Image (cartoon, rainbow, N blue to C red; front, side):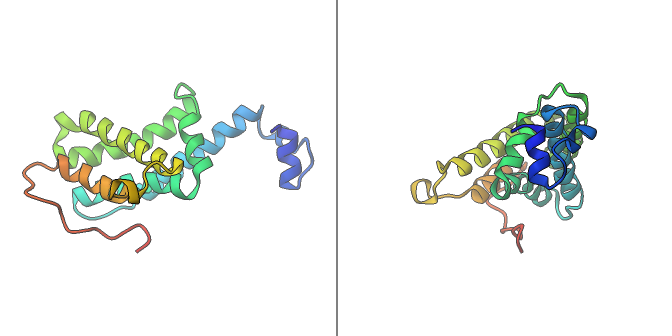
Length: 168
């Protein structure tokens, strides 16, 4: 799709987007930045016990994939070396690392944070592709997130009670 086509679909002149964006890549980067910022704003509002907040943060990210798969894909397709995109992604990553540190302590936060972020991304991708069918695996993405968070909580003797879902 060209910027001219974007203008036509938006109901403005075909050349209008060129007044705001250098090219299609710049437009897509801006959309990704807005998506990262929206997720971070939502995660910053989470309250509760540290493990519960961490679980909800992971589910918030996965929920973007569920509700807006193209937006989610765009977030992770934007080059990480784009300065503005890197700032937006880092804002969420830093918030997320602080939550992980609240659960496992600062020394282990990056290791567990990377594990959790990669796992959440995998869960979102498998759900989007249809390869995480509850009928096949006997578990859904929300349960996997709970298992992951429970697995890093020091001194736990079993699963925590279910937290409220994103919809509830």
